[in-house]
Amino acid sequence: MPPRRSYDQYCSAARALDLVGDRWTLLIVRELLAGPRRYTDLHADLPGVSTDVLASRLKDMERDGLATRRRLPPPGAASVYELTERGRQLLPVLQALGEWGQAELGERRPTDAVRAHWFALPLLRSLEGEGLVEVGLEEGDFHLRVGAGDGPVYGDGPAPGTADARLVMDAGTCAAVARGESTLRQAVRAGLVTVTGDGTLAKELREA
Image (cartoon, rainbow, N blue to C red; front, side, top):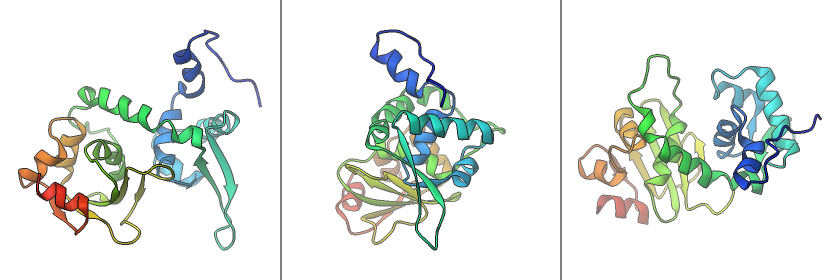
């Protein structure tokens, strides 16, 4: 592979941007925080990226030790990409970037794509403790692993197994939390989020 482009500056921020500063790289990380993903799934959930650019970014991430590719055993027999430990360490970076970008979110534009699981990271910022949380939106279900030390922090679809809490809300409420206009606890108190479940997280939210 060709050598990585560099800012050639002896600065940790510049070194970090050497690895993740290219367009689409951090959004690929966002998708891979859900766990192993096939190339076709990544392309479907990154509307606007070309196949050539996606393939190039994934190769860069493999070269730089942020992601790996492996072959699933039969009957899957498909190649998947997943984050390395170094790649998973970008979670707080994405969280901080998302929090900083709240002021830029505004109302959804007609040209804006949306996926239900894109709300996962903003909701994670509103939850404390540990546990499995299932979220139901009109656009679909996803689940969060609150306080996960390693591995996937969220995933598409219902929670695997019994969730500690299930949250049901409309997209407007979820977007308000993502924009920083409301905390999750405030939305629960206002009756905008239905909380069910017997886990500690559910009880804490109902008592908020």
